[in-house]
Image 1 (cartoon, rainbow, N blue to C red):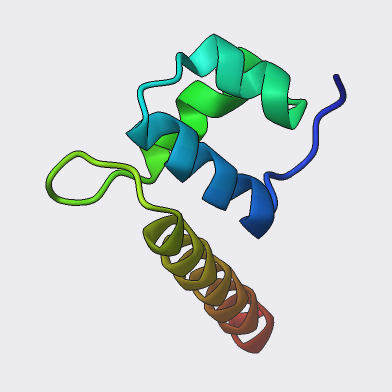
Image 2: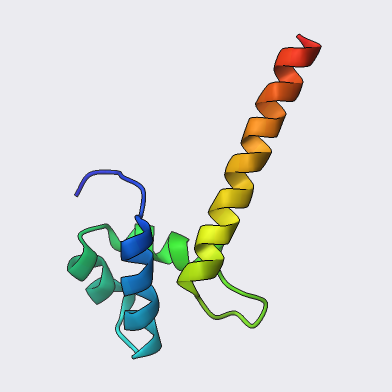
Length: 79
């Protein structure tokens, strides 16, 4: 399994499988990523109530990308 980003579709699958009680190892096999990638995704993208939701993960990723772009712009402007 190569290193690649988890897609929005995979996030939806993770959310559904997690909700029905599927083990992380089995989720990894089903969507074709490492168990470590699933663990990181679930840890990184929990809501305030400690539950994984695909929509929250997408929103956090979008916010992170905006922050990175803003930091790059700031670095360019300040040399």
